[in-house]
Image (tube, rainbow, N blue to C red; front, side, top):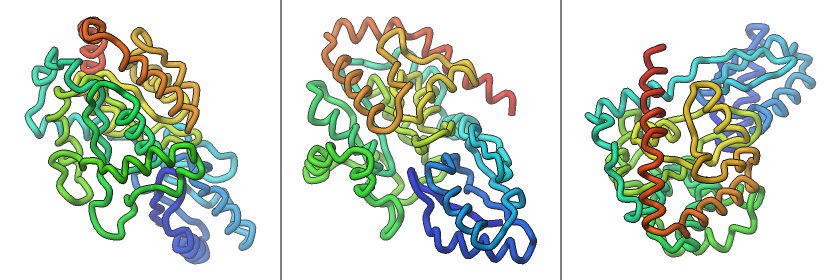
Length: 321
């Protein structure tokens, strides 16, 4: 089996991946590729492009190459796609419980006028840096902003500036300003790649801000792979605006029955992806920032039934496991 590690928009160590695919296929007459419990769009990270080159050069039968993926929307007419069960909703609930949290820790505990938005990011990808810099410099109200640079030297989560040129070169000025001014790391971050339990540590800060600006792991191409980033605000009874792939909110509703927040702001941004989605999110963020204290408090009261519904759905889908 070949373990393929991916980032937001590419495969790490493609030369090694190619060598391992050739070796396994020539030895076994087939090859099994595991995407390391992740759910990227294989086309978006250019895995199919890499495989096509190998198969065409060596005459490999594409049907004998299996891709194990956690992206429930992955399809291909030639390669064999093996769908693996997603489990982040289980992990999020288990780790939150391990910290002793329950709905009572979060229900009606927010003061919306304290910190308006929460951006609690680990890997500083192009989209997260864009959202952080916009909220920091364009919003009048305070927000809770945090992002890690690296957790270990020479690891893959150094600042993702190269993709800025691909997706949003217009943001270089604001992102440079953000990095120059400095951004706080995640509170209570362990200082290394967080394990399952540590991924939920920052739930302790969810009563300190009103709306979670979620930036999911895989957002490019055809993918649906919700992680703890999505389930954390649901457990913390927190409304969310999500940077994800096109149709992410729609699939979240149709797959599990969660409710999103189109009653309170325009969710047509879910029809967009990449930088167009970011720009639509900017408009929502700015419109919420312009609301009065009274309007923010009334909004929070009004959405309690939706927040409770989502929390209960999270408990229910974990009974299926």
